[in-house]
Length: 146
Image (cartoon, rainbow, N blue to C red):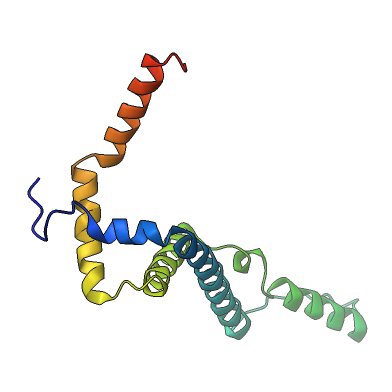
């Protein structure tokens, strides 16, 4: 592959490798923050949404029984399990936000980000990781490690 930016094959990812601990810490911290923000938004929407309650009252119920029936119906419509976990799309969104914020903390700005993603696509196209893994497997076989 002829790299358009110079002799280094993937300079943006090499730069990120130098800061891998800080990047990884920021990535997971930002993911936690993004998830909690998304869940809190979901809880707020659930608390503020209009609700319709269908209550069946028979003629033998006294006023206190009716109130208790209505109270139970309202409790059942309160924020529930649907606000405890994110859906698949939201999980991906949280990872995306976390990744972007961690890149920013690692010093990757907008112009570097374009290069970073082009490098990522080149890494995938060049099968860099698969090549390293294959080389490691060959070395393990040659040395009798497995």
